[in-house]
Image 1 (cartoon, helix red, strand yellow):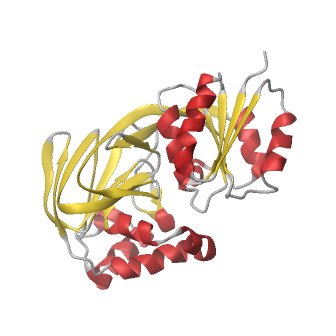
Image 2: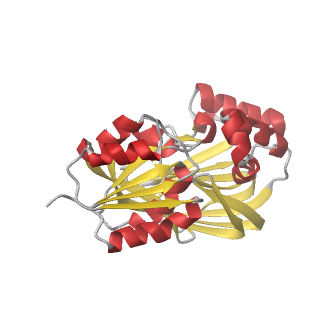
Image 3: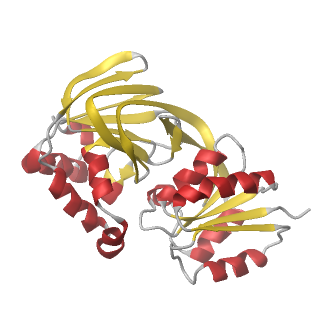
Length: 291
């Protein structure tokens, strides 16, 4: 029996010769039913993935950026059904960390012929993420780097947004790691990572692996342009944890309370402000097609 294949695509994202070409490439393979869903925004994707699973999809191609991957992985988590990533977004950090190229023909080939690995996810406030989650400075920067600017300026849009937010006040944070208080003080940013490279191509967590069963945790006390320049410079040239303005560890579970509600983000998608986060690692939560 030929497998049932699903495509869940963000129709505003582009890759190669587009979705028509994707349909041709899939039709050239030995497939049974092809379930095809297009959505105008990533938050509409979970409903389509649930429908695809109900219809018996045995492989799900996800066309879009990290936001699409995040929304789809939230549904696929624990299902055992593999995800094949077609990196058609402005931010493709998960695909980049995994070595999946922004090349349509090759990404489709990896979907059908690549090895299938179970990779970790994280969960924050009940929602899965694949790359990173953050609260404070980093989340405000991402919320500020809107879609149009990202398309036009790429990484520079994050730099411009960062410059606007570096002067923000420090916020009281109390962070528990696996039940024990690890940080209690004023900070500008809390970051949780499943992979090493984050927005803007910054290597934030040098030892992160998406298959080690752990979440990386970082907190920064940097404030103002001079201190942030020092932190980012250290990340670019050495190891993040060598900066006196950064603390880094790893955890199975993380809980954080903030002195005031902070915006937070998952894989580049902003969420409403909250004064507490609960996070945990989900070892082997998502099956992914890899080169």
